[in-house]
Image 1 (cartoon, rainbow, N blue to C red):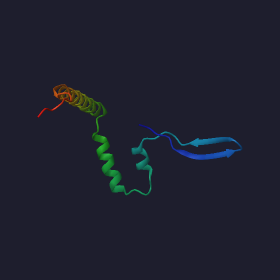
Image 2 (image 1 turned 180 degrees about the vertical axis):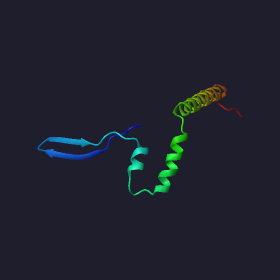
Image 3 (image 1 turned 90 degrees about the vertical axis):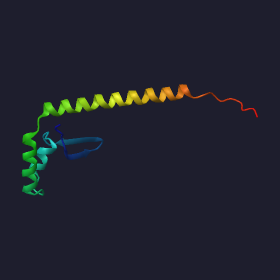
Length: 93
């Protein structure tokens, strides 16, 4: 997801003016960075080329559904346990 970064912030009295650079993805920023080794950039490029956004979205959706089912099962088990508990009572000897 593209992100803009703050480049310049100036204050003139009570007015603050901010300047931002153009929106870029973190991947694009890494490729433009001079401090990162070219070998790392080549590995990232190779990984980026095989990514399939539609497939990733499907996988994420399936995992989210699984989490929701697990959470509802957990809530059901917790509710059943609370129903099985006996209320406080007196113990007679």
